[in-house]
Image (cartoon, rainbow, N blue to C red; front, side, top):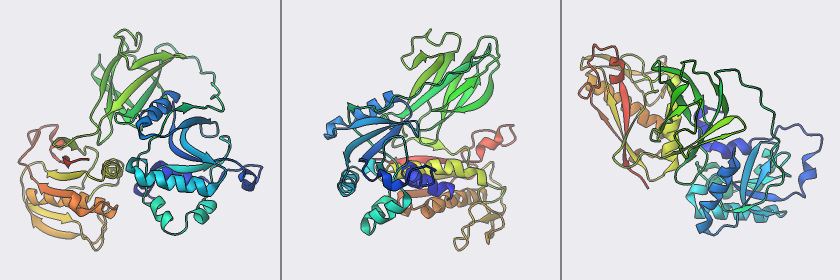
Length: 398
């Protein structure tokens, strides 16, 4: 499955595709287990509680249980041994709430497998199957605690001097739903960037800069940047409510907010071949973040701004829609003599048509090419590469 297709289905498709577990018992032994309408899965219990509470006004009587097989807290709103009842409830919730469109069914004892792919195929025949396949990203739920099994606390290895264990807890500001994000780690004493880290993982940071002071900077496209300066020796010294120390681990909460109408975001990790409107393969990761942003809000409209370093003319390659080789120079591309302005427009056009190829409607996007009219640096500067960029302007949101 391609990266973009995996992103399209998100957590839903990942969970639905888990059918290769090896268990001593036959799946039929689970037929008598409850079938749960699951609205979200969380690494931390407090996130499951916050997520549940965020939709109490919608009138759902949600509970959560710890799935020891997947080490996640599942928030669910309905359960029944009658699979058909659970299925109807699932589609009812998804029909009423677009931001719960990746809810799924779980049948098991929270220690074993999900419903198999084969059973899903039989359950979701006809038009209801299309609803599953059109699932986007997002989910919600409500609040009554019921944890069947507490997670087993693993004994953590002792930390060497100068090493610190950190856990970054990133959630969406709107509903407290967990979201994965990358973070830059800046050594404040040497003004040097350390190895990047990911949220929702326990990581070890070793500044070795004398003061152990660092800055954490969120890096996820479509969400505003969040920063935190942290003294790892005394993480609570500034009494920042986002910071907590537990079991020799520094936990830090980040609420991430999406861009709003009129705001701009730069696709710094989308790269083009020289003198071409064809992208390099490493661009896929950030393109998928842009795609997720568009799918997360079906009312969002954007303008894609292309920029170049300078205003020279020359031979350029640009996309042939009959071939659609977005990431390879070996395709049947068109070749023209064009201005820098036209090249930047071609690049915006390429991204637009990549998004269209992933299912985003053309009328949700506009494109414009600026050439070198809005450079950030002098074209001969060491940082001149920053001039070659694509910016996303948010024109409309829900």
